[in-house]
Image 1 (cartoon, rainbow, N blue to C red):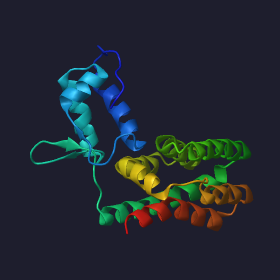
Image 2: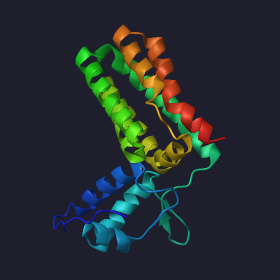
Image 3: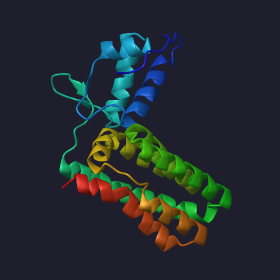
Image 4: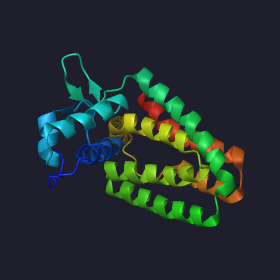
Length: 215
């Protein structure tokens, strides 16, 4: 399931495992409800049980993994109500981030986002779900970094993390064949300095698919 890596003898081994597992989950590389074991994580990353346990503890605290009363660790299987809640959070947080970023959205940023969006289109053509999720989040993160609101961005990333496996399931259901239309609207609003248009485009982009999945 996970790629083997060389053992890391440093005290920060748990941080390396945490960051790599976090990325795998956020990008939908691990399916919803997939069980993980400390022994398996340790083998995959070449670490002992202690850093594996610490990485899992941090991810459980962030909602990226669930821990049952029996001690079973797995990626979350979200209920429709939970998906709706997280979609609403994305709308609130990301619309505000985009609005704050707009005054600092210089042409170089818009051009970079257009290049990232071309990569999103490539992933759609390839039907690469993980690549699509990764490049889609890269598109949004590039804009939100300009908001200069690190606490708010951290909250957005926590929501992305909780939704990662579900986003993979959503992609499979949509069978998307074209890049997101709302990305073009986001870019157009940035070029025009159109804050209401930008807020509408971001809200639509981050909620439409998820709310379909919650039905």
